[in-house]
Image (tube, rainbow, N blue to C red; front, side):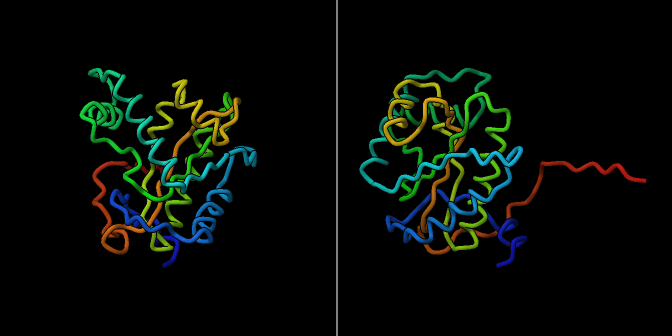
Length: 196
C-alpha cells in the first residue's frame, strides 16, 4: 500500500480483537509518530504506551467516573457531550477495549504542543492502516487533562509535571479482519483556490 492509498483508505476502528499485536509492530507504529514534524524540530512529544489489560481497565473505570461527574451544556461539543452522557449511563469504555493505547503529551505552554502531537498521531494512524491494524484517535484524556485524578493516574505511568496530555491513539486488530477501508464521502473541508 503506498502512502496516498494509506491516507485515503484510513478509517477509525472502534471494535477490536483482544489479541495484542507483536511489540515490534507497535514499535514500528510509534516510530512513525516519533518522525512526525515538530515546531523548530523540538521533538518534544512524549509517547506513553499502555498494553497492560489491567491498567487499561483501571484507566477506563477512572475516565468513566470522572466524565460521569461532569454536566454537558448546550454549547458542549458533540464528542465530549457523548462521552459525558455515556458515562452517566454506565456503559462507557473510552478506548473501545483496544489492546493498545498510546497517549501523547507535550510541554505545557508550548505553542505547538497540540499541532506537534496531532502530526504524530496522524502518522501513527496512517502507519497502522498500512500494517493492517485498526486505530482511532482518542481525545478523552486530553479533555480530562486538568482533572486531578486523571493527572495523578497518568503521572504514575510517566506523565511529567510540566506536560499536558495532548491526545491518544488506540491500536489493535480490527474485529472481523482487516480495518474498514472504504473511504467516506467528503462533504466538508472546502477548498478555495487563489490563482492567476
